[in-house]
Length: 342
Image 1 (spheres, rainbow, N blue to C red):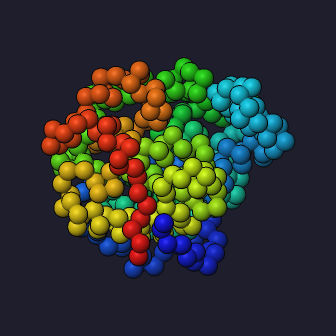
Image 2 (tube, rainbow, N blue to C red):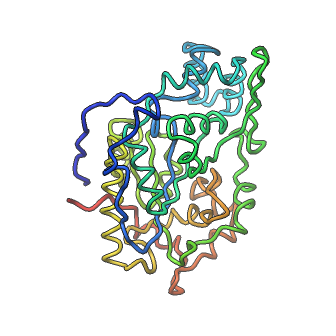
């Protein structure tokens, strides 16, 4: 089990100016390892402590009480995610700038995220946000808290939106696909599979890192080589209950320290060749959709039992670099691992 992380004293962070860290922390060291690392992260509750949609719905839309009823309808299966989400977002008619003014005052970013993101940029670690929220909202939030120069390094996979400026017309999500979840998994993977490949641009098989906080992150979390779960929240509880290997974190500083440690262990064991030391075959769907021209999409989260039916040619054809058995056949023998002990 990973050692307990020590949480630094609380620091209130509300804007880019207050977010600036000491130069010694921002100029993060180069880990100097041969293997490419790719990070994927949830947004609400992970990078930011609050949920962007909840702030808007409670302040300008259906209100907290109605939102909780709608959330329960999703959880009970009474209504689809897409149906409920359309009601929630449709309850908004506030101009985007007015809504954002409230959001930026109510949101708290993880106090060490900017430092971690600088670390990713310095070490050429792609960082991707995967969210069921609205891309224009998430991009505006990142631009504000990180600055546009750093924000542009983050790819966002989320639904789009039509947001009227008249203050009377309703917001309307533009779903990626016409399904109950707003996403057609088969179409998503087909859109990217021609340009996606197992190996990264430098020829090594990348290590996949996922960062999340809730049970909704589980489909993606199970696909990672390394899983980080925010301490004390539902994703960690699920991991404990189901004996799913993970690394707890309090802030992104904990993640940065563990990524450096894991990368060095992998470098010592593999020299960046072949499979990552903590290889998880489930992460292959992420690897296939990870290249300069493609970022992963929710299609990569299809449960294992569905994969062979949705993409039989992809599920069965992948081989190891040494022409060994299909990588998926190694799944049970190679689960994701927690960080090595200090």
